[in-house]
Structure formats: structure tokens, C-alpha cells
Length: 151
Image (cartoon, rainbow, N blue to C red; front, side, top):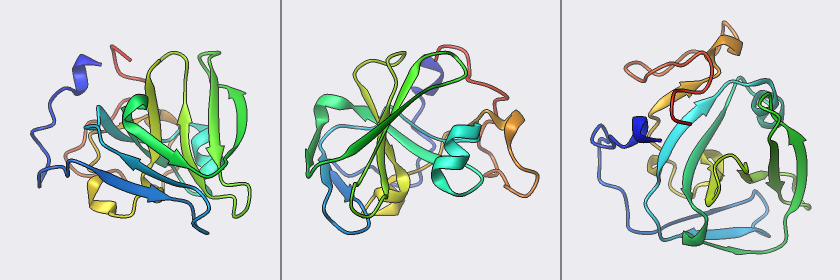
């Protein structure tokens, strides 16, 4: 993930701690770690699970997240064959995070679950080859047809 070590493009400093949760509030989290990367994924699974043209994720060290409330998980193999676990609130259905054994030790928090949406500052678009024509990309943010090298 060396390709994403440059976090200097952030327009504002990251908070030392941030929080989020589901729509109904039954699932909450606090993260005390600095994000490793942030991006938009246009793969079919992310599109379908978001109900939009892409999902936006903030990758953080798993050990830095304290989760309260129960989640329900749905596991499905990604294009790579790795089983991606998507966790969501069993009450309201809002997605909260995902994990992938190809990237051990990381949780991918859904940007839509953040209390302060400005914590998410995208660094890339991945699986752009699958993006819908109407789903515009962020200006100045690198675009990768698949996953970038090193991921």
C-alpha cells in the first residue's frame, strides 16, 4: 500500500479520533487510528451494496476501532476470490464496515457512516472500468481500472 502513503493532499488535518455509526444508532464506533487510505470503489458488489454508483471507504487499522452494538455480516467472494465481509446494522440495514483477508488488520469503514463526513478525503477511484457513465469522478483523484499496484 505504499502507493497511498501520501496523505499530504488532505485539505485539512485529520482528527485524532473520529466516530460514526448506522442510521438508527444501534451500531456505533470510535476510531483512534489514522486512516491508511480512503477511496471510492466502483466494483459491482460495492455499487449494489451502496445503492449508488460506488461505495466510499476509509481504511483504518482494525485495532484502532471500538465498536458497540451488534452487526450482521454478509460474506461474498470478490473478483480476486477473497471473501469480503460486509457488516451492517441488523435493524436499519445501514452498512458500517467491510474487511478482506487480502488486507489483514484493516477495516474499511463506510464513509457514509461517519459522523463528520469531512474525515473522508478520497485518494483514489478503484475498479473504474466498471463505473457507470453517470457516476462522476473526483477531479485530481487518481483513477485505477482495477486495484492499484501494491494492494
